[in-house]
Length: 165
Image (cartoon, rainbow, N blue to C red):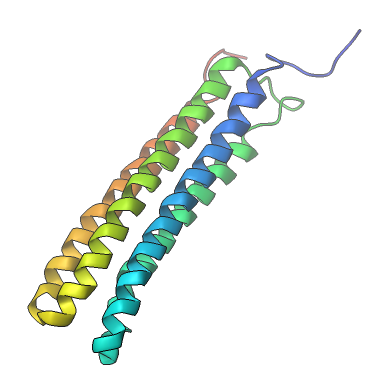
C-alpha cells in the first residue's frame, strides 16, 4: 500500500493538539480576565460612573491574550503539511510544546489580570492615586503572556529541524 504521506503518521496529531492548546488556553485566560475585570468595572460603575471608560483597561488587556493564542495556532497549523514536507514526531512535539507554552502562559496571565483588574478598578474608585500602580501591575501580568508567546514562536521554529533533508 503506497502512501504519499512522509514522516510519522501520528506526528500531526501532536502538532494540531499544540495549535488547539494555544488557542483554547489563551482564550480561557482572556475570558476569565475579561469576566473578572468586568465584574469589578460594573461594581465600581454603580458608585462612580464617570470612571467606567478609564477602568476598562484590564478588560482590553485580557482580551489581547486570546490574540496571542491565535497567532501561535496559525503559525503551528501552517507548519503542518506532511504531504509537502516530512513531518516527524520531533516536529509534532515542538508544536505541542509551543502551543502549551503560549496557552498556559496566557491562562496564567488572564487569571492575574482578572484578579488585579477586579480589585484595582474598585480601589481606583476610592483612591484615584492607585491608577498608575494598577496599570503597572497589569503590564507585568501581560508580560507573562508575552513571554509565553515568544517562547512559543521559538519552539515552533524548531519544528522541521529534526532531520536534514
